[in-house]
Structure formats: C-alpha cells, structure tokens
Length: 612
Image (tube, rainbow, N blue to C red; front, side):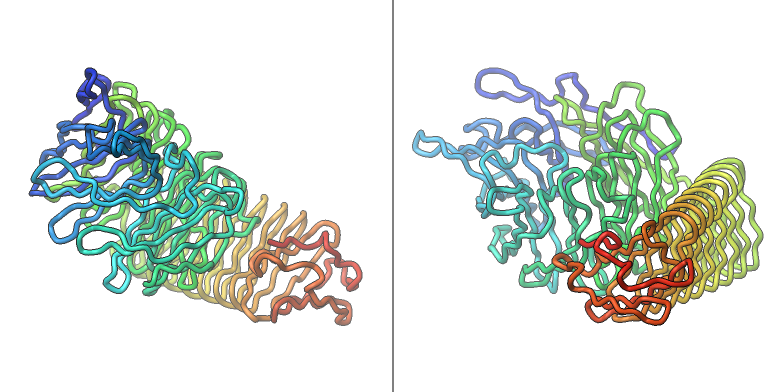
C-alpha cells in the first residue's frame, strides 16, 4: 500500500489556542513546510484568520504549536484574513510570505492592509512580521479567497531569488496584476516590476524553467480564460509568450484549479487538475514557451474521487509522482514517466471522513516522503507517508515482445526494437529507444513512442498517443483520440471518432479520418487532410507554407488563434491559385484545396475562420 496514514489532527480539538476571550480552534487552509533550528514545521495559512504552526516529527507525526495573527495581540498587532502562502530559507533563517489581507492596530486605530506580509522564523521564539508590501491593484477584500487563490511563487534566476505575486482580481481599470520582487538576504522584498497580463481574473500560476529560460504559466478564473505563458527575466519583467488556443477542448471553457511544474530528464511539464470533467492534464512546455498537451487521466481505482482541486509533485527513489485531491474522499497518487505519462498507483481512502482536499504539501524528512493534507475545516489536517511500490513491466534492453494484463499496466520497452501490447484496462506503454511497435487494446490507453521511428496504434476507446522524437506513424483508430506526432516528420491519423490530431515539429502529414476532428499543424511544412465530418484546421505561426487537402466550405473552419489578438479577416490576403486558394497571414502561406476539386477565393469569408 503506497499511502499510509501516520497522524491526523481532525475535529478533536487538537489545534486549540487562546484568543484572549477563551479557546478557539484553528482551520488549516494553504500549506507550506520549513526547517528552522533543526526542526521541521508545517506552516498553515487559515481558511479563517491568521496562520498556525505544527512540528513534524521524524515519523511524520504532527504536534500543534500555536496560531498567530488571529487577533491583534497574537502577532505584532496584526490580525490576518484568509491568505495564500510561500516560504524560503536564506542563511539558515526561514521566511514565510503571506499574500492577502490583514487588519493592523496602531495607536488604538485599525488600518486595513493588503499585499504581501513577510514573516521571519529563526527558531528562537515566536514568528515576527518584518515587512508589509502593498500590491498595486489589490482591491478591498483581497485575500479572502478559497483554495483557488494563487500562492506567491519563488524562483532563482541568475543567482537572484525572485517572488512572483498576483492580486488575481479584475478591477474597473485592470485585468489583475503580476508583481515581482527581489528577495534580499534578510528575507525582505524589493519591488521590481508590475505586469498586467491579457487574461481576466487569473487565479493560479506557477514557474517552470526550459532551456535556461523561466516562464510563468497562469490560467484565468474558472472558465473565463485558458492557460497563458509569460517569459520571466532576471529584472522581474514579464512578457507574453503563448496562449492555449480556444480549440484545445481539454482545457478551454473548463474550470482549472491548480498548477504544478515537474522537470524530468531535461523536459519540463506542468500538471493541471481540471474540475469540470474531473481530469488531470499534463502539458509539456517547449523552449519557446508553447504548451503541448501530453496526457490526460481520470483517477479510477476507487469510487470516492470527486473533482480534483489541488496537486503536488514529489520524487522518491528516482521516480516522479503526482498526488492530487479534491471534493471527494480520496487522494490519488500517479507515477509520472519521463515522457510525461501518468499512471495511477493508488488512492487513499481513510476510514474516517476526509472531506475535500483543500491543499497538499510534500516534504522529505530523513529520506522518507510525507504528504500533508488540509480540508479547510476546523481542526483538520492529516500526515501521510508514501511508500513506493514499483509494479511496472519492463523490457531487458533487447528486442522485447510484452503483452499486458487485464489490469491497468505500466509497460516500458527500454532499448531495442520492442512490441508492446496493452490488454484490457487503461494502460501506459512507453517504447523508449529503438524502432518500436505499440498497440493499445481495450481501455483508455496512453502510448509514448520515445526515441526512434515508432508505430503507435490506439485501440477501441479514446486513447492518447504521442510519437515523440524521430519520424513516427501514429494512428488513433476507434474512439475519440488525442494523437500527437512530436518531433520529426510524422504521419498522424485520428481514425474513427471525434479526434484531436497534432503534427508537432517537423514536416508532418496530419489526417483526421471520420468524425468532427481538430487538426493542428505545429511548426514545419505540413499537409492536413480532414476527412469526413466538420473539421477545424489549426495553424501555427512559423513562416512556413502549409496545405489543406480537402477543405469543405460551410463545414470546415480555419483556426488562426496562434497569430495573436487583434488579427482580423481584413488582415488576410486571399487569392485564387488555379483550382485552389492561397491565404497569406503575417508571413505564412496556407494553400487551401477543396474536397470537391475546386474552390474559389470569394467562398472564404469571416465565418470560415477562428481568430483569437
């Protein structure tokens, strides 16, 4: 059993404190962990007022210390509201950053403060508020947020520790603002830059490094806006890099609730729980800041899941894992492969009611991995120990032929020319190096080719196929599939069903098949064939000449979202080219051929295009 419950402080009045009028009880919300004075602590922002601390023993057991900032006499005349939280250690001292609101008592007068509050923990006594920094556009009431609110994020760029904070709320004059600060040696903040992104009411963000570049990935409040990526530089400035197109049905018009970056084998991913359909999405972040959907999974071992709300990544014995929880009773654990695939290994379902999982924190203590879970309820936080069990099926470096079991299998071919076949169950197949053949079978399978010229065939249900490096042949077959070529000159086909088909980098052949498909070219000189159904052809700005082989006027559409906001139909140059039509857009050329053999320039109108 990978998850073992170590300790729980749950509604038995474990977290009581004196509020000056009697005993109150603390309600843990957002979590972070620190080490100071040789002792590990769980620091808990409150869903109500203030923040609390509990010591973490070497076996993961928790002991509540006290609550601070719940009233004016509890922490330097500050009474905190519901806040988000982050932490860093500098020169042997831990600093915690609360983002939100507080009421301050000064000369018997009350003042309402919003922004960032710096709390110093040196292990010698009670925590100390050493600084308050205003956020430029934080509105009245900012900080009284649910678990959808975004914690401050801390990243080191070129030897400089930078904190990124967001007010995450639209006012009459702004969409919301990112603000960056340098963290000085004494933990205090020096303002750097303020940036207003182009999405509305962004709720969560996190930081990922790719090829030496640092990016902030953010999404809008609930279903208002999809993911966007901004480039973060050492001076604290942020510039727009990428926005997920509206045709990405996995994320667009869905309620996303958290972000978690993961770096494996030189590749950078971001894991996104999506509440609407209850899925966990994995995007790879490419060197130019673009996002490429790699996998999507639904926890399935137990029946007490509920929609995912929070996610945390951790590493154990050289393997990468994702823990996620939400509105049900369970916490699900996924193993994450080097290709970004998720394979569920366990769901924790306690004997006593867990309630929602508000936040998760992972911490390694003495070589053992612990998870801490809050629910936002009074007196409730849990300590869990993760014990890894590797139940994967592995090749031996030669030319292997491996067939899965009726269960949900995780199969690695490793080196050699391998043939991997899934059976019943939702399987993950990863070819590794060499020229591999991967076949899905029954169930919702995830197939990853790896290095080499691979052939991937989906099965009967909606599968996820990713060719990865080199020139691959990828075919979804039956079901509503996601089929990606990856790098190389690939041939990618959806097959039956309403498929999402992506070429990736390279000169690709992208085919939809039957059904209403979405075809994306990626970078390179690509050719797209929609097949029957109402299809959407998505183009990437890359200064290349691409081709649609069978456009059906009135049924199909051309998506130019990647060319940026402000582009209009009048900006396109549409000309006749024999029996075909040429569309020129910002230096790119799209040759449009008709499924009937002839198309005229006047047939293409505003309704045939999708703009940002």
